[in-house]
Length: 444
Ligand code: GLU
Image 1 (cartoon, rainbow, N blue to C red):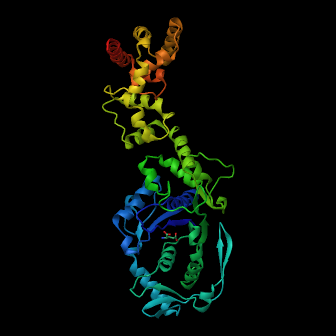
Image 2: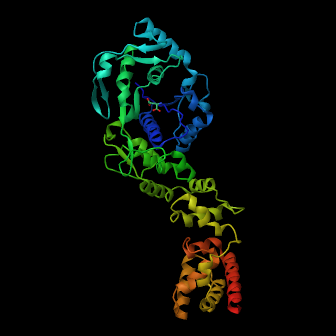
Image 3: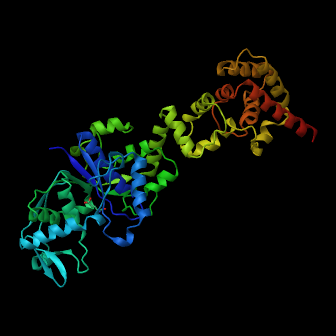
């Protein structure tokens, strides 16, 4: 039987890291097994059910690259789903009638109650093992529970189970916080004459200090990672390791490898901990290895303005940055000098770099560079170092003014690499601007 899994979020206005991880595990299991991944919005709570709250979920999943496979019949392939519980009232009503007809549901004070079985229920869970759920003292007295409220609204347990049944879900992979609901769900499946699906309750995600993660905690909401332009591939990779690990403890993996290796038996029982630092490390590991076209795309999304620069130039410039920039949102500042001549000098740096004692050497460097055969990094580096030796000055005394002249700031790509990208004409023009400034301060 082909695997069918689902992500069934309730719209709350956020996509919490825990929800994103649940979506990911379901998606990975579907892709690993060649099954189907269904998205179902559990939007029966009308107050929270706003288009914005639903969009946060859809946008979050799209950003992560977790595509869903189907939706209500009749929708075209490119526009599939999701299912909305708010549109499925008739289906629920039909099943409630059937339960009533069998004597398994009955009216009580305007609401409809489900006649719950009186014995303990064993939940065979793929992660937690067999979990025996005894009746509580209160349930001993009254095990039946409401499935349709007196205002006519069906409750979560009922619609969740009916949908899993109607949608042919084979595996319910969800947070461990739902384990306590599962005995009710199993009883409902049986009452509906269906075999329950397999259950896999995945460990909770805690903060790195072991405290319970709430939506206000650092890193807890996916939109925070979206807004800081984290690499989605890195977020997926990091989330995949929250409660799962491949046998050899690999960490940095491309999506294809995660799909290939992901499976339910390797899900851990112990709670996972969310570590913002590790997420940032993972982000950098992915960022520095991205194929250039993807890197360029993320740079544009992060607000990088390439002006009217040529493609080759943009790529060459980005290559010198990719290994150095820890997060893509730092890139626009880091490589601005490539795309405009009109940058200011960092004054603290300029004061040192353009100090009078550096002037003579820097002017000589300009002449040397003007006459170099080519502007390859190896050549400029050798020439600069030879000149420092000849003048008996520190390499810094030439590098600092050159860097300040070319970029205006202290941090940046390798000087020789960035000069090769800028090209000789631009570098000499920037040297001249700096020399003019040194003249001014010399006079002043
Ligand atoms: N709407 C429920 C939630 O967001 C779904 C639970 C489930 O996956 O069965 O927690």
